[in-house]
Image (cartoon, rainbow, N blue to C red; front, side):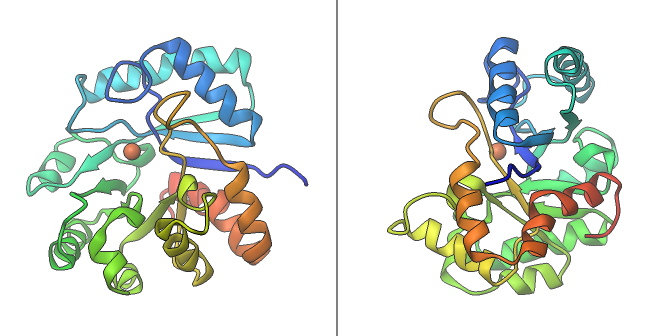
Length: 240
Ligand SMILES: [Fe+2]
């Protein structure tokens, strides 16, 4: 099996910032683990709400990682973003630069309480879109309102982009999250994939099983889009 290039748009690799990597050493190990499996571009997306550091400190940390990885992983490209926990102030904070968009584009990785109602999720998407942002809904497989309904297409039509985690594709087919995620992929509704890596153990970068399943069940063109091409467009701030 040929190794595929992966663009991982959802990671917690900034050391000491949130519940992700605890040190620069762990960060480099996580990146190497991802690189060995094909990751060639990674966006660091720390939890904004839990972040103990400012956007400018996040930028400094990313630069430090970039310096280190240039020597050890020269083909790896790194970008900065943030996993924004949506609130009524999010748009204001985005406008004022208090929150970080994906690679300084109009795309915003956004998460919500898992129990959010569909109505609230829909109106949050509308609000972000009206403010000229492009919301990417993080790990949509976790929201019960989406699992219980069949509204992912309607959210996309409203301007949302949908991300699921690699771990929700490669798991056991007895798992209902895996089954739901695979159905969304087979319907072509997903725009981006992310590892959501936090550490080297329980939430480490793991792509291989997910890619094996996708190679068996998805069209080659679509697989190329969700693994690489859509994210490339996103970091250029082009429409996906
Ligand atoms: Fe995350």
